[in-house]
Length: 106
Image (cartoon, rainbow, N blue to C red):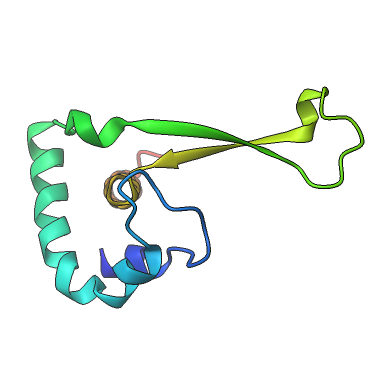
């Protein structure tokens, strides 16, 4: 969990929960045990909290485009809950590791 948090990028747009990645990285050793417990429970009971599935898409103009009437002149940015991203990554890594362990992947 702490390794996943330490891999977060510092200079990105804030997620929906407005928690800076830099803050998560600074306190990762303190919060990792709590997040591990949450991830374990979510995985065990097969439930992912509904509030954590919210995503907001923001459309930004790309700089230097001659014509902003063309769709390619814009860049969609998906804002997701930062803690949700971490939990999803940890669960995905767990599934991948288990699949490798039991040779389920070709």
